[in-house]
Image 1: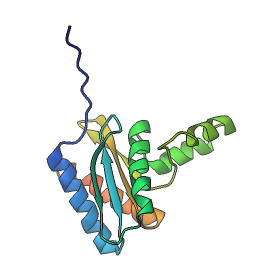
Image 2: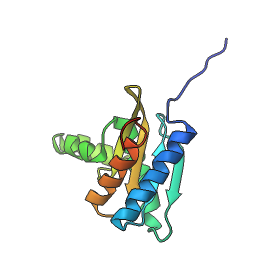
Image 3: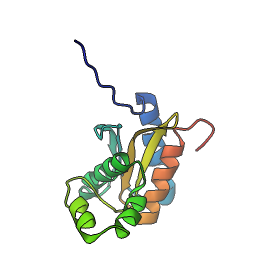
Length: 144
């Protein structure tokens, strides 16, 4: 018997395009960012640390991407979801490694299906969200 599991995620050209788009947008905003992309299984698929970006925000960018992929929503949306949850749920989820409600993570979709997440860290919440949205839009033909 042969069993195989396929994990969806963006192909390498799309990953490269999103990373370069994120770097370009960060440059326009004057942000030195860390940018991470994970596939549908939460596995790191792409990462770049712009020169001068905070070392400590590298892991946070990965966590933002992981959270967005895990819940198929932005990290801001995850924070809103948690705000409406019981204390036990909120604290229980936020104690889990790699989950964060810090804005700057967006879910990725391919052909209407969940395909991973993209996380940005290094600027303000608004800048990180702007960069993430700009980069993820680059993956959709006719957008970005």
